[in-house]
Each structure stands twice: as C-alpha cells, then as structure tokens.
Amino acid sequence: MAKGALSLPAAAAAELDRWWAELRRQPDRLPAGVEPVQTRLVRAVGRGVLPQVGDVHVKAMGFPRGKDRLRYAFRALPAVHEARLLQAVAAAGLRCPAVVTARGARRWGLPACSMLVTGTLPVMPAAAPAWSAMAAVAARLAACGVFHPDLHSGNFLPLRDGATAVLDLQSARQLPAPLERGPRREMAAKLLLERDAAALETLEASGLVDPADRPDVLRRAAALRRAAVVRRILRCLQTSTEFVRERRWNGTLHRRRDARLGPAALDGGGELVRLWLGDRTHHILDGQAPRLDALFRKYPWLPGRHSLYSSADRFILSRHGEHLLEGFERLESLRRGELL
Image (tube, rainbow, N blue to C red):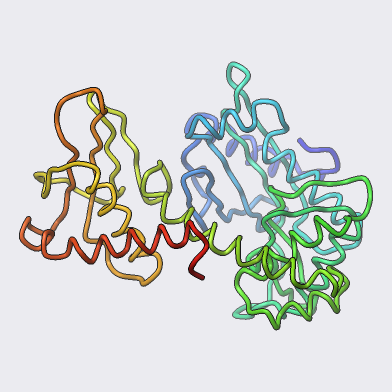
C-alpha cells in the first residue's frame, strides 16, 4: 500500500484483497464486480464499490508486451509511482483523486501486474472543463515542480463545486523545484495539440509559459501533432489495442484484432506494405472504413512473397490500389513534416 493511502474498514480491505488476488491470476482482466470504463492493451480502468467506503476507480496494468516489462524493470511500478504523484499534487492544494491503495507485483524481477485504486470524484455531469481552468491547473502543476509530458484535456475534470481536478499522472514526474522554461514549453505544446494558436494566449495569461516563447511553443505543438498522427498510423505494424503482431516460422502477420482471415487477397513484394500503411493512413486522417484485414510479411531470407488479406475480393482490392498508395504518400509527407 502506498504511503499516505486511506485507512480502510476491514470489509473494504478484504474486497481490495480479493480484487488484487484476481488481478494477479489474470492481469489482463478487471476483477469481478469492477465495471469497465476504459479498456486498452496496456491498461484497463473500471468503476467499483468498496464496502463502507463508496465508489472507487481501479486502474490495472498487466504488462502484456516485453517493452513495457523492460520499461518498468528498474523503476517504480505505475500504480506506486502515480500514487506518489497524486499525493504530492494534493499536498500542493490541487484537486485530484484520493489514493485508496497502490499495489504492484513482479515476477523474476520484471513487472507482472499493477493496481491503483482511487476515490471517485464528484464530477459535474455532461460538462467539460473550461480552457482557462485547465491552463490555471497546468500552471500550478509547473509551479509545484510537477512535469507532465503527456498533459491533455482528458487529464482534467470539472467538479460539482466549480473546481477543476487533474488526474492520470502516470507519465508525470516530481522535480525538486518549480519547472524551468523548457519543461513549461513542452507542457504548453502538448496542451495545444487539440487547439488552435489563439489558445496559447490563455496559457500565457496563466503563467505557464512566457510570451517570448510563443514561436517555439507553436513549432513544438505542430511537430507533436504530426508525430502523434504518425504513431497512430504505425500501430498497424505493432501489437496494440486494435492490432496483433504474430511471429511465425516464416514471417510476421499483422492483423486487426476483430478480423477473421480468409484466403489471401493479394500476393506480392514490398508494395503490399505500402498498401497496408496507406489503408491505415486513410482510416486515421479521413475516417474511411478500412479495406484491409491483415498483412503477412515473410522473412527476407526465405522464399515466398508478402500477402494481403481483405474482406473485398481480388478485383475490388486491385481497383483501389492506387487510392491506398496515395494514402502511403500522405504518410511519407507527414514524416517529412509537410502536412498538418
């Protein structure tokens, strides 16, 4: 249990023990009785009730990918780290979820599972936090030495009493002094990803950034925007919430998690990778329904060819090939910084 966590009644502590035991047995599932709120490959967030305590939120991580296990091999597990940040933020007078407990387990020195339980905040229903309130909270975080490289609008909640709370501090770090101009510029640029240049004036008025840093913040925001889109596109080549990467004896299969593969629609060389990426680019940038279900890439030292799988037949796929290649060219333009 994290230092400073709430002292709990016996019934609540027993329920937490049950949740933790179930999570350790099945790290990829929320415990029974916890209603899912958000489910991703690397973590799940749910809502539950603790006896004599009330509503709580549960954030669970099971570390399904090797890179995630290595990332936390020599640092505090996510639940423990975030609990410390939440307690530091609360001590600085900012509103945030109260830590109920933070637990983590390792196996052979590598992280196996992590669970953070926090009290549920009294959120104003069907409301979004004001931009000026978000800017003010971000400035106060910087003033108390909390650097959050992934701060965005989803980290803020409007409360019924009119205050704005901050949450999801897993990526944040506590520094020993108020943030200097460089980290402040990074936080401001990240906040601007979903807004236009005029919103920067509010961040300047809050004290988060100096007006002299305006050009640098805008350049940084544009670069982050492009990088974020490219990362979303390239997830089709990785194991992620939407895709699975399967290693086989003769190559690698990249497929949509919801796809049921039939016969290969097209065989060929490297151009099939471009078609796969072009299809994903049109989906992310334009919201077009994906036409392709999977890509098989053979190992270069073995005979054979790449394969594409699609619910469309060979004739329809070939007819749309030029359109998919245009999508790939748009991805290349993004990589060169020519779009967005």
